[in-house]
Structures are given as C-alpha cells and as structure tokens.
Image (cartoon, rainbow, N blue to C red; front, side):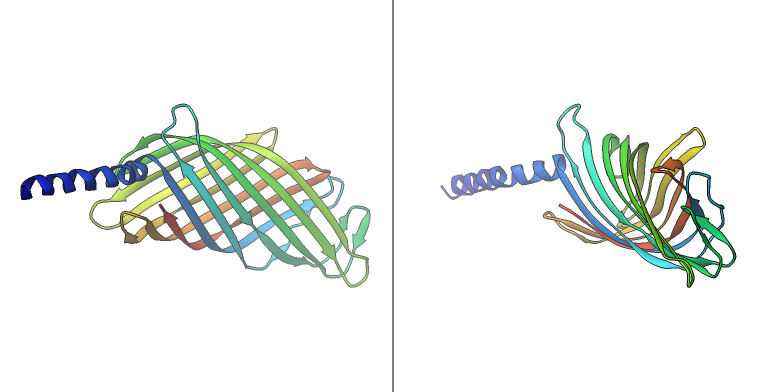
Length: 250
C-alpha cells in the first residue's frame, strides 16, 4: 500500500513538472539591458552639398534594451526586438556649412542616432555548448542632428528610414564554468552605403535555476553608419566601445 501511494505521488509529481520542463526546453524569453561607453568619429551634411568635416566628439554613455522570444513552431522565425539609444556630442573649429547656413566660430553638434532592431531569425544549431542563428534585421533609424554656434541660429534636422540587413549570431559555452562567449552582427552594403552593428563579449551565469537564469555580460560593440541621401542627409559615423549588461532568461 505504501509503495502504491508513493508510486502515485511520483506519477503526479512527474505530470505536474513535465509541462514546466518542456516549456523551459521549447520556449525561451530573453530580456536584457546594456550600458555602453561610446567613443565616436564621423561627419554629416546635406546630401553632399555641405562641407564635410569631422567633428571632435566626446565620449558618452549609450544604452540598449532587448527582448527575444524563441519557440518550437516549425517555419516560424524567432523574434528579437532591440532598442538602441545613441547620443553623441562634439564640436569643430573653422567654417562649417549646414543646410544653407555657414557657421564660422566654434560649432557644436548634438547627434541622436536612435535605432530599433526588428530581428527575425532561425536557430540553425542549439545545444548546451554551441548555438548558431541566422536571419534578417529591419533596423529602423530615427536620427536627429543639431548644429549651433555663437553667431548663427541653430539648425535641427531629422532623418528616418528602415534599413534591411542580414543577421547572424553565435555562442560557445565553456563546460562546468557558467561562462560563454558570444557574438552577433547585422550588416548591409550597397551602392556606396553600408551599415554594420557588431557586438561580441563574454557572459557569466550568476543564477541558474529551473525558473530563470540571470547572467552578466562584458563586451565590445561597434556601430558604423554610412548612408547617402537619407532624407537629404549624408551620414558617416563610427560609434564603438565597451559595455556591461545583464540578461534574464526564463
């Protein structure tokens, strides 16, 4: 009798925990945030009509937030949405022409390169040691350029657009350490235009339980934008630097 009761209890426990185990294996939600210490260089102007000059940009802290959903449904891609808020400030000495105005004293600029990634991807390989994803990224860019000096009135111009890009990601786990190395990249190049967004780093799981995993990240990211005539604006920026982040997986 005792054995029968224990067996029934074991079957009941297995029945209750099986959906949780299957859900953990088949479905995954990832939420992450990163603080990015950026240094930048580059230039911008009005569709090749203005003088092209390189600004002296200050180091800034940018942020990135993302959420991803992975599932087992055949032929339906996984999805990841990542919000990237990039702001750079700088100045230049000498004459600078921008949208019909000539700035002759020390010119300052504030450039916002906010962009959002809408990534659809497939897991080509996924096990305890190695994972490999490929897909597409529709990067929506919402930029704002502000130029000012002590003589001329300030000028603010905005530009926006969606850039289709190829996407790939890979990670390799180091057994029995909680450590893994990873990288992902989005890229497109055509007719003298190019856009790349690359990051690589190392991740350490500080919490690893059935319900959720919590990991910390340390890495390097590079965002390079060279676009001609996007809303009448030419841009050539390279923003890069180290970042720290956290990721929750459940």
